[in-house]
Length: 240
Image 1: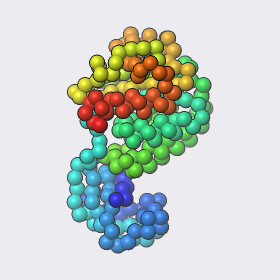
Image 2: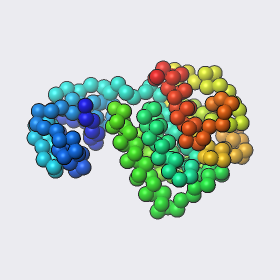
Image 3: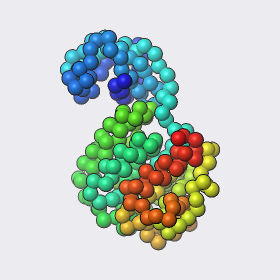
């Protein structure tokens, strides 16, 4: 069933405008009487019936509502070392599908990509659109936020505001199963860029209490590691 996000909880009737209205009427060619799902970005789904439509507006009657069943019990914020090229597009899409709560691109010591402010702003807009589309496709109850690009040092305090800080490190560490439990509800997950996390960065994270994880003996690409780590987290917390 087609799915769209709205900015606030729905009442008895809702009107959709803009690109979503055009998509419903032109691309999907939906008709009066057909049903679709709205989500309020806060975890509630609304079953709706089309009461009237045009290219500019779609009028919906709300038939029922229920708590979204797709959201995991754990909120994972991914702090991803900024990779080269368009690799981050894939990171955003796959992480959203796997249940990530927020995505924070960070420039680390070994990051090759270091875009200027204007380029950063454009990238974040594009990544947010990718996250939004992925959230619709996999029936998420929220739209994961892609935060502004920042430096590793600037992100440190925010990283350690989470319940648990997990760092995936190619230099070895503890097994995920020895650390991750179903009781965890708020995780900061840190993945390095192509060159990995530097010695100084690992030291800074360890000194503040981060736990170092290994994802196995194979060296994973920077765009593969978050997919692997999120899958493991969702499994060990009972969300897969």
